Length: 198
Image (cartoon, rainbow, N blue to C red; front, side, top):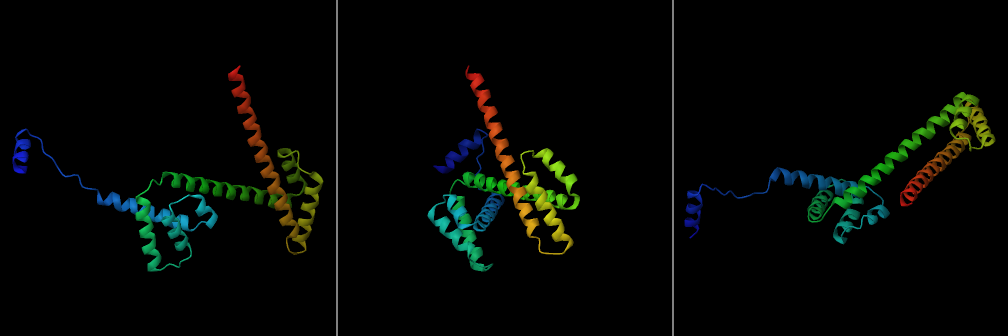
């Protein structure tokens, strides 16, 4: 009967081919999932738990995080890649992407604060005036004292205690400004929405 079916279809000019999974694509997907499992295993336990993974995957990732670079680790990662292949990983990828963006933002913020600290120590009052133009609510007296102490420590080759205090103060200053900017933007959006409602 199958042969008749094939002949009939061939007479009509229709050919059927078996749809086979693309092995190259599957290998790439598994490799990406292997990498994903490895990236998640490098995170802290609290962050791993926040992904809300199925219990077998969560347990495996926690085990991988405590293993050295051995064959057993690689086998466990391959197993995890196979398990991840069975579930929807989009929410996991989105969460990981958000974590990476937060981390990149923190690094950027760190560099900005470091540059300001170094500039304040090197240029003194000129840099302080520029900083106060950008951040008028900053405590001028405290900043000036921290800068002078950091300059004295640098000249005397002492441990950079005041330099660290200056860094901490600048970091809180920039974080507070980011929060204020976020609140201002939220207020503007709220006002725009209320105008639309009227």
